[in-house]
Amino acid sequence: MSTENLLAKMTAHGIQISGEGFGGKVDISCTDVAAACAGMREPVYMLMLLKFCADKAAAKPMQIYIAQLMHKENPAMPLARCMDLALVVLVQEVGGYICKTCDGTGRARYAVCRGCKGSGKADISQRERARLVGIDESTYRRSYAKLVEAWAAQAGQWESEGLRHVWRQCRGAA
Ligand SMILES: [Zn+2]
Image (cartoon, rainbow, N blue to C red; front, side, top):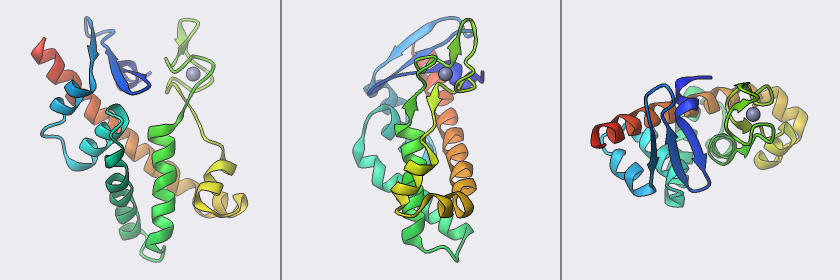
């Protein structure tokens, strides 16, 4: 399991950062996260607010941010379609579903959970993704699945960056 996954043990609308391997455990409130977010670059900041502060106002700007980058890389793809795909990325990355095998911890039976490979998250089905975009599943799989995966991975990296930042701040304050 990656350091970031290890650090992040999320509760519904907040964050609990468990510093296994870092010597300690810190319970961090949304206010702490928001305060610690100062100085983060834009996508990281938005994602942290959205994910850990349940700041719904951050959802739209985040969606637009991803959609615009997507559109820039794929100019042939209409911006409206990019918006729909960006939504799928956010639902997967932010909403997600908690892995039932490990209850979101990423670990089961003292080992990395096999159900989610340690991420603690369960994937949203391809059919659900297609429905969010408003197209049929085979079109989604053929044309967009890879793209959405790549962007979800990108969002995951932003999250890791944000968590490392928060962790450093909270360690510093303790
Ligand atoms: Zn799992």
